[in-house]
Image (cartoon, rainbow, N blue to C red; front, side, top):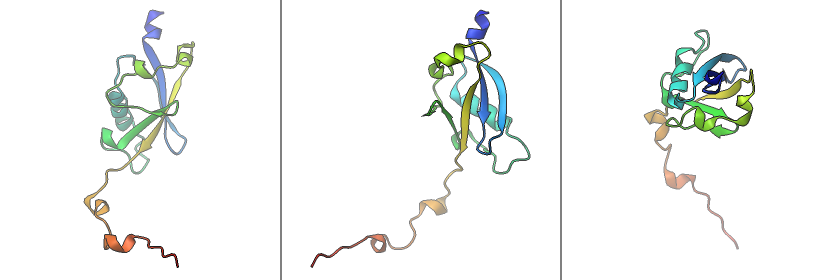
Length: 117
């Protein structure tokens, strides 16, 4: 029974409402490892799947999870209930390309000017 307390059942909810999992993860599992699991188990029929850990954001209990933290760091009291499954929401942010980084047009043209007479 002690083994159950050292693991957390997690399912990953995708933006279209479908799920990956649930699957048991040890408390020592890092968030980066969870993201790698999402990438490897991403449904093949879905477009625009993540390619790297940097493209994946995991949200649990309203918090964006940090890569260097572990499952234990984000464990909630509810997750200790028998049969409880924690849902983590998956957000995909594609990397910004060089084209998107460059400002469009003259930066002086984008400023608003007000006159009081």
